[in-house]
Image 1: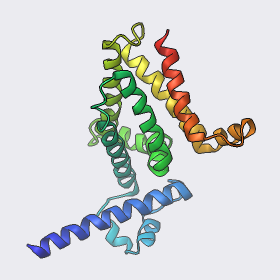
Image 2: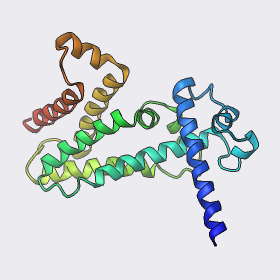
Image 3: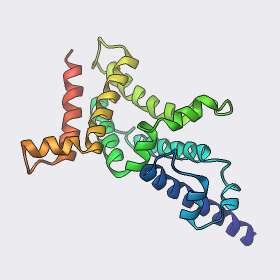
Image 4: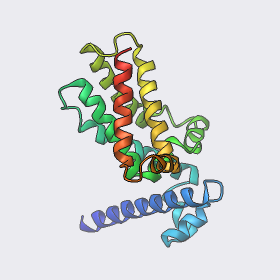
Amino acid sequence: MANKDKRKKHFENLKHAILDAAKTLFLMEGYKNTSMRKIAAEVGISPTTIYLYYKDKAEIMHALHQEGFKLLTGQFKTLQYVQDPFERLKAMGRCYINFSLENHGFYEIMFVMKEPLEHLNNTPECDGWEEGEAAFQALLSAVGACQEAGYFKDIELHELALLLWSNLHGLCSLKSSGHLDLLTKKINEQADVSKILQESFELYASMIEKI
């Protein structure tokens, strides 16, 4: 039994090592320039061994996509006990921003790189987009609770959720690319860019609430 548990732990540890190495290479060299052989070399295993874990790099990319959304959704779930729905929505915005700053690799794979969605669209056995849908459902639930409390009365639920997410994504992408830092420094050398990100989203949500 002990040997079985040890083998299982080794298997899981190696899977995570493969994912970490692939994530680094995908971001540094691009998806097309990353091969299974390169990933195996980064981990320190043979090219033959890596195929015992993943059949190709598309499957690795999909696994990273799943892990990223599971992590984000898990963080959203910790906010479900915030009683005021509008405060909960703003907290979700802060959570999303912090996720993008602290998990740059996952964020790029989840929301910027096109290959994960191409894999989903071209692979019949990938039925739906469970992890991504769970994250968006968390946003829909928060927005719906706001509407039940009297906020955002005249905007359709899904359209509003998309507006809020698009605003957040735009802000995080500007930060990721360095454009937000450059602009902020030109305005104020002492500015806290992370704080500006959060305050911008909260201001945007407040503006929509008054429509």
